[in-house]
Length: 339
Image (cartoon, rainbow, N blue to C red; front, side, top):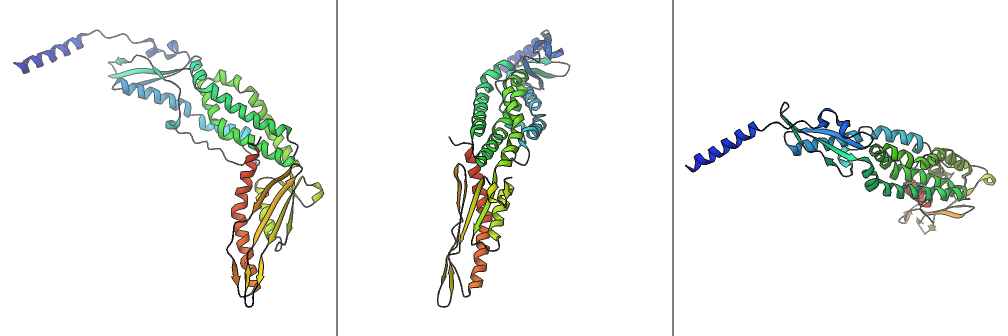
């Protein structure tokens, strides 16, 4: 009797559900823009076997909408403002949907489409609300930091430091602002266009100012006790890689890189010992910009002096090639953050 009652109750429930009049389709089913106009909302439809699946599909549609053009826009941003011979770091333009941190997403009340046998809903973001709560404050902080760096370069008198600080501003924009502004621009195009107007003017002037600073940041390399300029050539390559102009005329240089090689030779009764070290300093009108010591080397001992010198120059060259470019680049990047 108990089983019969349970079966009867289920049958009555199903019959009642089947006979319930269909709810009319919401207006957004036929026309999303009529309920969620594009200038006010970012809205996408989602379908699923359950309401939860429909909501997930709709939110993913919003993520796809934002991410589909981000990569191409970042490339364009890099081409206009971040690429070129004066850039230290490359910009990572790979954007993955799952990495997007979207502001609050809301959902319309789901509607069951009997013809499709699926639930439908709309995921939407209120553009004004998202801009105010999720983007404006952080973007303002990032833009202010950029202009702080940019302003330092504007008033810097030393050519080497000015070049490095301008480049620091360029790199800060590429690493911290590019991706954020592209996403924000997709969320609220009108607000973003007005917000970034001053920034875009500065960015449009930055390549010319970088090139002008580079033309003035001329470096002369002076080496002491070098072996046929072998060590000097390594320093030359490193400076060229950072796009500094080099000169053979000390009088026209804005800064001098002085490189001193000390092979630390000691002659014994039947052997020779060497404790070599290289010291370098870059000095300009603003004082010493950078100091460098080659990495520590264990004492080199040989039976003949020629064999010892050969090992000394090989070890020194390898050490400078490995460490100087990295340390020099880090020092240049630090100029932008100094007060």
